[in-house]
Image (cartoon, rainbow, N blue to C red):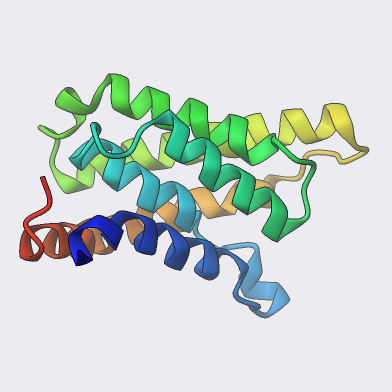
Length: 157
């Protein structure tokens, strides 16, 4: 039974980490926890987490963050689609190479999210908007090793 709820529980933990209050100076560096967790499960078990799971996670993220409904859903769905389409190649990369891929994916995530929000609202681009890209890249190896250990202990397939 625990195996069935492992992926949804890890996504819920990522959503909670995404909204935990942080000081303003640190908040601009908050990693994209939802993207990191979805990326791991999309590469490790692409048949268990797909674009629909990313869409539902994005709806939850939109509700939690108060953004226009569908922004995170669309962007997370596109990112997970890219990962699922290339998971066999990405799984052969080392963890450090994967962290560079996660950084590029996070930059794409933020730029696409900015573009959509710019079309809908009146925001303008600032370079600190891309700071989570660096922290997502730094936190990827630890998230990878933790989720991989969890997957192996619970024998998820």
